Length: 268
Image (cartoon, rainbow, N blue to C red):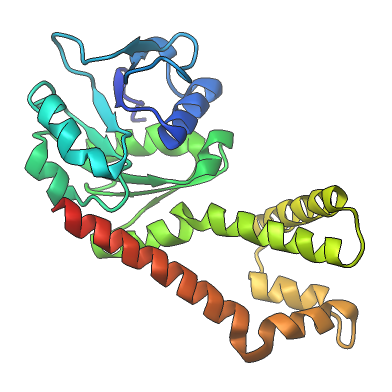
């Protein structure tokens, strides 16, 4: 069984990288003593993890993850790339930055794009990967490292990565909007706003868990809830009219995918 890299450096540790790191440590997937976070402030760094403001003077880790904003790609590469030349495994969570753009700036044994979403912090996220053969040594190492974060999916074609980013990377934001809208609709019917929000959140949580465990499609599950002539069916008729909900989600994901493409073009 391929083991998780023993030593890991994180360049930057914002919301997403921080969520990943905290779950790695909390789940026991990584030894905090083997992790070094390199960023200006120690804020948010888990106990036992080494914090530095610059890379160590010598040596290389088994794996290094870029966790900065995509807009800082060139700024970070200018200072970090010479120091980490030859790192065995380079992981990048920079949205829209392609493998070729990373290889142009960093010399590494293997480069893997990583697209997590925020629920990785609970071990219930989605992590999309692309860049190497999943069965290669760096591929297996990456899978082993990401396994504690939730569902891990290798994406065969990089031209599909923007779509994956729009769906699962951006998806939690869209779900939060839906929960808020569901709660607001409940409040419009007379429920206290805080109670409507609790009900909406628990409803989405339970429905998602049931969908994840069921062998039936979400469409089939929806039809099971919606008895002919019943109240659920009447509400669903509004969502289904002219495929309004599907059209809205297609437009939403298309907008996010387009922006991912723009980020990729800017980083080339």
